[in-house]
Image: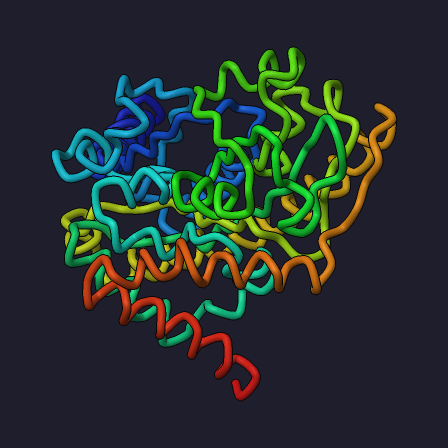
Length: 333
């Protein structure tokens, strides 16, 4: 009888604990094989260690039935609490947020890391909170160029070629200013267009270059060194949800986010190495982007995409200046 009563009490306690646990639904569009999904699982596991009453459930492949582009609205409406949100989507709705998907700045994901804890991050976070969400993870990824006809390194090398950037319109603007013809098409047509020659250059993240099999239809690739495509794709949390958490819960969330960022950084180094290996095995010629070629791209970006971004609003100019100052000040910290 006592054993039965004890078991009943234990079951009651567990059921109460389960009922009190807060579920944080983390939705995203990526496959389970993608580094962003794996890093989200790390976040969920680390959060459970630190705050057993917080349960981050990870939903891949848009399984929460939310259009990837509409994740921001879904977050504000309470359809999910967290999201892995590509910032180019955000920039289409809030132009100032294009600051974290700008051509040629940061110069690569490693250098983006120095912005952590900077004046820029503080200003960016404050702006995001005004828009209803908070950035949790500092997930930056690098990209490169896959090409059919010739190596694409400096701006002169892309002149006359048909190109597409997965980074968004700001990147296409820079490629066009260098003399490329821009082809706009959905990602699903990327490989077939490269295979037929309809598209000659693809600027994409290393994982995208591999996942779409572009190493099988390209003769040249620019991977490593400096990067003209470095984009932030973070986990974001609803500001309303963030404000509802206790101080201890917020600390647990931030610590879990930091652990996932460390993991994600490692996956991106591995992605670069894997891309070099795959393109090399397929017979493509690999080049790193040199500082001289990177600097030439910076000049074009400065005269086009950067100039256009700064004109968006006083806040955009403030964020851009804060980013540049933070890079300069990073050597003093």
